[in-house]
Length: 457
Length: 112
Image (tube, rainbow over all chains, first blue to last red; front, side, top):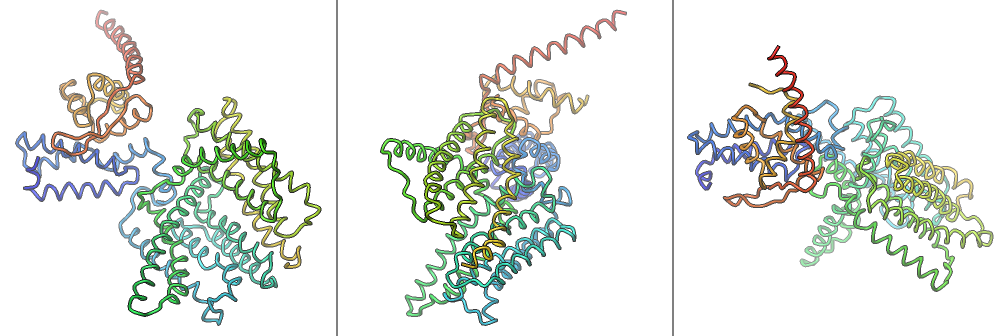
């Protein structure tokens, strides 16, 4: 039908229609293509029957059905496409164009605010330099997370009580990050740096869930959001790295050194702003890489399982014990955290109603082998714990190991029940969701209690 | 004659499966075939067919692949699977029961 090319208005109308269709969150790219193909077939048939292009287009669109009804039907069939939207559009179906526009402006302003926030301490004489690194590291969360929380508070229309509660949380966090007299190389100070964002991420989650943290599904949505945000952030960071590299390189070519600009401005400001922009992108689903986290999970679950099994086999075969070094506990913490992540994101993408399949069995093998490896490591560490004594780092690492171990042990039990047809997959998902606040609670404990407990060591 | 919404929805699955059992097809052609078969009495809103097709695909009753149309546009073709054929046979049996039952009572009503 090259004849279409002779009727630009028709092509224009079709592309208009396609744009309207694209705005529907329940209808994705290939669906739009499929529906457009249908529309074109219909238009072609009608023009062959003697209608003009305009008439044919109108009839074809009418026969296609109203977009609202259509996207409702698609939504019913593809509910997984809607997980973000479920709580995003509080005012019902319509996303008025001006709301989107206002949101864009707000996000840009918030990103700029985050960029300004990280430079604000300079005004008070705290230069962005090595000697102030502990200050910046401890306060990193406060340059960006309150703004992110504010964004969700605005978007979800939080109640005043929730807003006050969140504000108090951040204020308390800022207090604990800064009132303790940490020394320059304080271990508890470093622990605060590592744990504060985890503790405060829960506050972001409460705002994300629109205050209905306890409502079904809200936490899982937040887990999905977090995973996608990490992926978006990494992508943006890669782009930012390329941009920075080019900037430095090009100015070097004309004999001007702009490394200070990159180090003092582009990288810190960009890193802050990117959190907000990334969040907004995940929200707006401007996404080609949508739901990437579950894909990565599928990809890496078998690989990690193989590595763990080979590791166990090698350890048994050679009989070489785990070298109990300083970092070994932390390494095993990271391993467990990674396995928990894999379980979490596999669950996030799984249809809870579906019967057990091979992948579920693989997950169980993964969890079991991780537990086994960690058990061996813990035994080795326990044997020498008296020798080490309880330093802040070791206590924190041990606590985390136990928290993750409990989570995985119970997950393994639930998986096993599910695989034998004695339990529902939902039980596993509920367990993981119920466990989420535990991480933040422990992180808060480390931030609040550890420094005085260990004399700000 | 306009069919009720529920009846249209209920008949969609066996109709689509039966049409695909005749041979692979795509959305627009399926709609056209439904129109032909029903003599225009069974009017579907065109767009509504696609969620049905996607559901059948998810249930494994049909398989989809992207091919090209006569003018070279990308087009999604659907094929009935073995499960789909089994489902079609089952549905056919169920519809026969409904049909027989209604038929029986309506014939009786006529003879009284």
